[in-house]
Length: 107
Image (cartoon, rainbow, N blue to C red; front, side, top):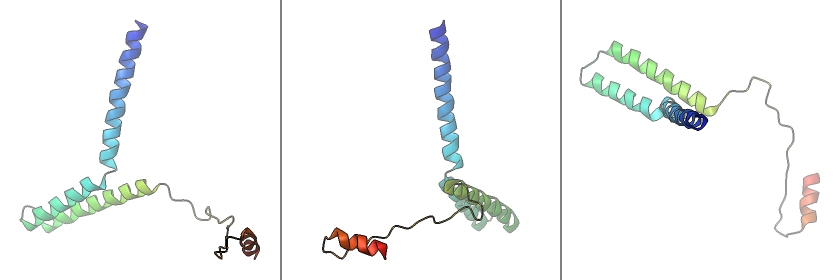
């Protein structure tokens, strides 16, 4: 009985994870949104929708594109959070002399 419950829960968990992955890929795929934008432009050119309807669709699709790109970039750090804490400089004069590199790093 316990084995069946474990298998059932494991199977459901697997299926739900696959669904989550599929939805996540659709939400973060800007190609789908671009295709929708191109389709809206075609519908406008063919006279199927008005300029006003196209403007509304375009604004919505461009907002979705911005959201996708922001999610792909990750969270933006707050102002003042980024600092340069150190820089390492190496100098290679081609002689293979490691002392030359150490001397240049001290300069």
